[in-house]
Image (cartoon, rainbow over all chains, first blue to last red; front, side, top):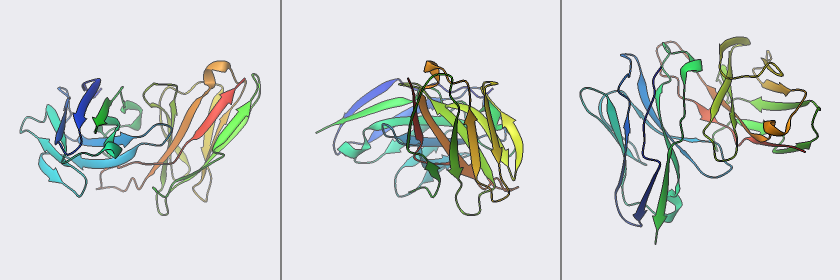
Length: 113
Length: 115
């Protein structure tokens, strides 16, 4: 069972870079790491996904060390609209049953002016 | 907009009643997932369907059932409703193609209130 551990909450300010780290010590060989963002009363929104090293898209970067036991979501120059809950998921590969997906409590990110 | 649609957006009903939530996946996606999110809780995986067949089961109560139809839309049926069933119910879809990572895209959810 791919369990993840994230900080419950984080605070930052507009314009800063925010890094949210997730630990997943028992990640399986075929597991991918996926991050979702959720605003209140809305469905989670896919942010980024990776397997190893570094992945970057127009929204964020994902850093995964060689042992893959943790990952860091990096949000460059955050704004007030980045205030949301961020979930780290491990799994979602074709080799993992969906029944083992656990969203957890996520990290509640608050951005201040 | 994820491309996943869910109806209705809001649903208010009484204990003991039965309701049906509907989900239309993104165009081309064969897999549908259902999740429950209670107030200030994480998302709990309920069930997954792939091309009409049940694929995986999570913490779904026996009072709940789902199906996926030939046109790939899915319905989640909740019966003998209890106060504790009040929650947001999300549907997600994915391509679930062999050789690809299973990225899920979520709908806007249905807020169920049981009085």
